[in-house]
Image (cartoon, rainbow, N blue to C red; front, side, top):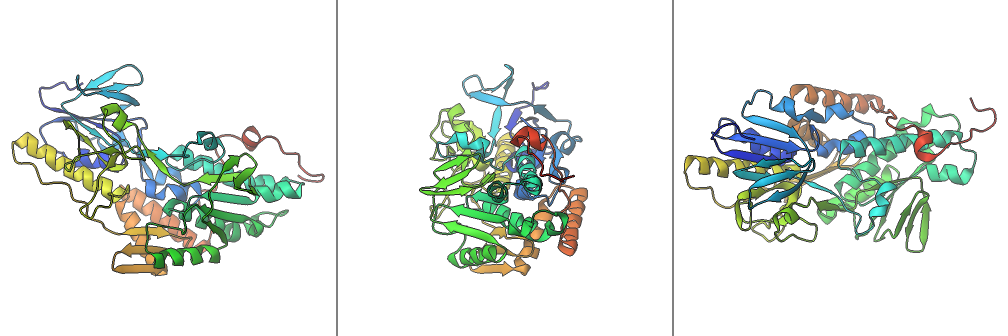
Length: 433
C-alpha cells in the first residue's frame, strides 16, 4: 500500500506504544500505515472514570486520523487484523485484504481474561474499551433506577449491591468511585430508596489489594476503601457469575451488577508469528523488542513479554508502552540511516500510582512513597499532563474541579439500550408516577 519506493512500516494498534512509534518517526524517510480496529486512541488510565460517570467519552479519546492529519506519510486504516504472514511479509485483515510491510510493529494490547470462564463476560463485563465503559456506566445507573421502583425487598437489595472482582488498580479505583457515587452523589436525588444503603464489594483472590504496591501502601488503600464504604474481601476466589449474583465457594452474593477487573490476556500476536508466549499470552521478545527469528518485526506494550535487569517483568502500563515505542523508533531510524542500533531496551520505572475515591491516592517510587490527598493531587496533575491536546487537559481538569467542589459527577447519562431491553421489564408499584 506504499506508493513510493521508500521503506514501508506497518503499525498495528493505535494505543500508547503504536502512537509513540509513529510520532517519533516524524521526518524519517519511510511511509507508515497505522492499522486499528477502532478509529480512536483511548487514554485507558482514565477509562474507569467514564464507567463511573466522572468523565465523558470524548474527554479521554481522540480520532487517530486527526492526530496525524498533517503527516502526509502516515496512512490510517480502520480494520481488524487476523494474522501475519512473515514469509510474504504481509498483514492479513479480516475483510480479506492484506498489507505488505518492510518493517512491522505489533502493539495490539490486551483484553480481560476470565480464566477459562468466558461465559462470565456477559454478566461481568471487563473494562478495556469505551464500549465496556459505557456498558458498565449504564448498568450502574440503571440499577439505581430499577431499585427506585422495585417492590420486592430482596430484588431491591440485589440491585443495590455492586461487586467488583479483582483488586488491582482498576478494581480499587472502580470500587472507590462507585461507593462515592452511591454514598455522596446520589442520596438527594431518589425518593423511594436510600442510595447510602448500597453495598459495594471488592473481591480479591490474593491476600491483599494492590499487590503490586508495597505492603504499607496496600494496607493504607485497604483502610481507605473501607472508610469510604467498600467491603473488601481478600483471599476469596469467585467460582460462579450469573445474572443474579456470584458465588465464592459456598457463599452466594446476590447482585445485579458485577464488574470484572481480575486479569488480562494479550492479543494473539504470538500466535500470528508462531513464537513462544508467556502464561498471559504475551509474545516473548528479544532484548531489542523484535520477535525471535524475525528482526523486521517488533512487538511492544501489553503484547510483549520482557524481563528487566532484576528479573522482574516490564509492567503492562502506559509509560512502559511509550518507552518501548520511543526505543523502537530509535532502532528504525538507526537502520534507515545505516547507523549502529541502540543497545538493549531498558525500562525506566517512573513510579506506580492508584487513586481511591475523590481525595485519596497512593504513589510508590521505591524509597519515596506518598499517600492521601497530596498523592491524589499529584496523580491528577500527572494524568492531565499525559492527555493529548489542550482542550482535553482543560476539559478533564474542569470536570475534576467541579466534582471536587460540588460533589456532582458530570456524565451520569444512561445511553445505548433501554433498561427494559437489557434487564427485562419492571412493574412499578401502585401509585408510582
